[in-house]
Amino acid sequence: MRLRQPLRSLLMISLLAVSAVSHAFEPGKYQTKGNWGELILSNKGTFQLETVGGQSSCSLEGKVVGNKGFTGGASAEEKCELSFVPKGKSIEVAAENSACRSYCGASAEIDGLYSPVPPKKKK
Image (cartoon, rainbow, N blue to C red; front, top):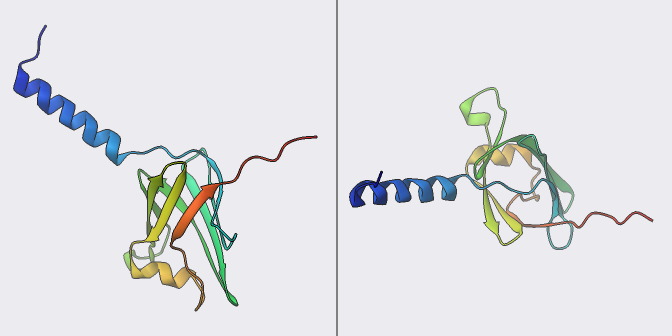
């Protein structure tokens, strides 16, 4: 059964949109250049993010949904939303709302490029 051209085009556009929205990141450990930040992605769809800046730090954990990370807060104002943008094998992380600041000290940041850490070789 052949699909008509408009229907086939619509189906292709829909498939491309779905694949662009839901990027599956490789589980593992990622670090920033200079090792001031560490991101751990589990194979269960969760993340942990720790950073250090000056005398301060950030500490977040939550769920990954598509290209977004969400922390659990008691209210909408307390929920931090992060964007995870693939950059080759690395991930560009950025805070999407002001609630993310509450997870950090005065001089610590979340935003940055996190690159995969190769697994340690066993001797």
